[in-house]
Amino acid sequence: MSTQKKILITGGAGFIGSHVVRLFINKYPEYQIYNLDALTYAGNLENLKDIENAPNYHFIKADIVDEKAMLDLFAEYKFDSVIHLAAESHVDRSIEDPLAFVRTNVIGTVNLLNAFRNTWKGNFEGKLFYHISTDEVYGTLGATGLFEETTPYDPNSPYSASKASSDHFVRAYGETYGMPYVVTNCSNNYGQNQFPEKLIPLFIHNIKNNKPLPVYGDGKYTRDWLYVVDHARAIDTVFHDGKEGETYNIGGFNEWQNIELIRVLIKQMDEKLGRPAGESEKLITYVTDRPGHDRRYAIDANKIKNELGWEPSVTFEQGLSITIDWYLANEEWLNNVTSGDYQKYYDGMYAER
Ligand code: NAD
Ligand code: TYD
Image (cartoon, rainbow, N blue to C red; front, side, top):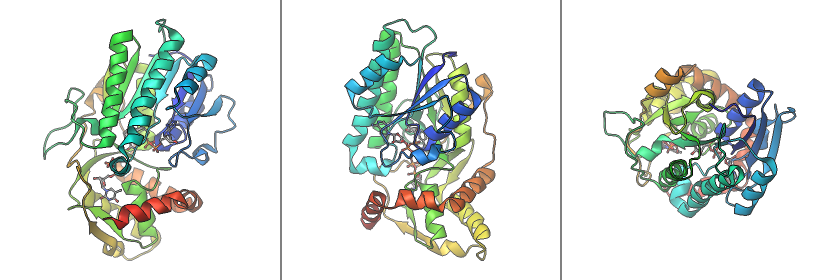
């Protein structure tokens, strides 16, 4: 869709953003990539060490909540396209501090939309605002059915409510100001560089260190898991070939109940750590449930598959194996991000449960 070359990627120092930045830097040396990130606890420039000296890579440290900074940056750089990933992204944190999610996810997104609109003033030919969102905006599913692009929004957590709100603003700017946009709603990602507050990296870390594995509620909550590099590939596909004004759901065709997923993870980890099979199952600890916990997410990703030809490139077992190997080989990364403030968060979060 967009052939423009000056691309702003927000949240590029985070988990998914860093994989998107890397893919675009390596695949499109002719594009200038601007990674804008506030470097919150979840942002880490170490994630991009391998490409930080690439001639087409530029880093801007800025906060999308800062309206003036966004207007000034867009006035200076005149970005042709935006791929917007910057967000507060963890449901448990949103339960503790909803306003932080309103600030970054809602106000930050509107600041970017305003700055984009202000820069191009209605001359949007060849421009694109690509908003990255989540399947959590659709709420929760019962035992059957899948989220379609037409499923009504029904968010249940402060996180998903803030993402739903930002999605609505993006669409509203399309309708009201003719701003060219595309939105994708993706299922749960896993892979290298994910902050260890999320299920898979947290459990890898805890299994390795023989620490309890805190399973919320009955453990029968279901998520649809996608390897992060496959999400980055999907973003590349939609950015270039997606239809303006459309939404695409992205998923892994890969549903797992948490407790079943945890057993697969334990199996692979025990093998890799040379422990007797099933040894780490003793670490499973059922804890108080997350309030408002969505029972099941599952994506129908057939629109992007049939219309744009994207599908996942690895199986869950392969993706999980690559992910575990990465965490085992990158102990220093894990130690850096889990020291200091995160340790305080972890102690507080799990002490309450
Ligand atoms: P993440 O928390 O790992 O990274 C977020 C990044 O945004 C960090 O680098 C952080 O420093 C930056 N950031 C946060 N607030 C900012 C601000 N005010 N200004 C500038 N930068 C700021 O998140 P992630 O898991 O990589 O998710 C990226 C995007 O994808 C989010 O929009 C999220 O809603 C969406 N998403 C995530 C998943 C998932 O499973 N992780 C699934 C679907 C959609
Ligand atoms: P998470 O990785 O936080 O993603 P999301 O809430 O966005 O789906 O959690 C994935 C699932 O794992 C979810 O059902 C909550 C559950 N979970 C636990 O059981 N224990 C934990 O310590 C965490 C972080 C999550």
